[in-house]
Length: 481
Image (cartoon, rainbow, N blue to C red; front, top):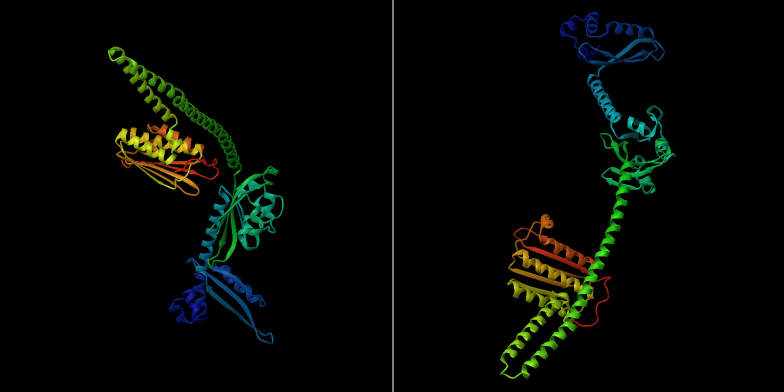
């Protein structure tokens, strides 16, 4: 035996100094877990001259040695004896044992994982099939492990065909062809998620299932297989469909309520226009005639009839006050300036009056308002700006208000911004401004626009309005700005 043999068996120098094979063998036997079997195997192999042998030998110190033995013959067949090779494989055995322990733990995790799990190797052979997938498919582990040729697709689709883990294993070949068979598919790095109806599950009752498949790689990065997690999401899909149906019904109800609200708002606006004209044309003209008649009567009465003339003057003043009231009411119902001079000029006129009444500095900026718009758009914008100014005057404690009106090829944008006390958007529902904001939103919705309100305590409030010009009623051809 050589020095490597001495080192592996850890034979002491004092025994080696004796140069006795029997002493060395005696020491070797003392280190074995089963020395009797060791001797028996040696004797057996010397008897079986043609036999080669490989085995592992356990030592009492916990180490494991690998032994290989082969006969030695000359070219003419003369038997010389046997050669014995020994190698310490303790670390390898420990690594193998750790690997097996880790594999067992992983197998247990997969086995008892609540999601259905299937694992295939890179030859598409099933190497794992847990309890959850047994319950889902009715196929037992012993009937599917080792199977290939798309056998694992049968419990889901009733036919042999690629499923998601096959797409992950060979995306270049299968992804384009089979991705369209899924209701939903999403990639996230190497993972692929998908949803599909599996008709063959649960005795052909079928079920919606969710998949997540990811490749398995070795230490060199080579794909060695694919693991796929599967969930039954049928109930979730049913709830989603129920929610969708409820949302559709709610949407229909909302559309009905909105249409009714729009008709009411339109009817109110039309009634306001009618009342405004009647007040202006009928009552206003009649009061003017009454005033003229009183004035003529006053002028014809002699100066000596002081009491009569004083009474007539009192009536003239009363009629005059009534005329002013009628004009104010008529203007509030339908501002004549909106019909006579257009939206921008009407807004400028209204903001000037607002500044005089409240003392709040108001500035109007316009760009692109050189022609008239539809009656509905002009009225909606006028009323919304009017309401925003009212809110600024009543609630905001503002010192300045800026009104910006801009028009381009596609839309009208209006911003009404004050420097008042503002409010928290979350408290809008409890704010006195809520009713006004809702009114603004309703009017702008009628003309297909959008409203945003931005505010912060101490930072003022902004009302932002956008009204599209496409698909609107044809713009008025008369008038201009």
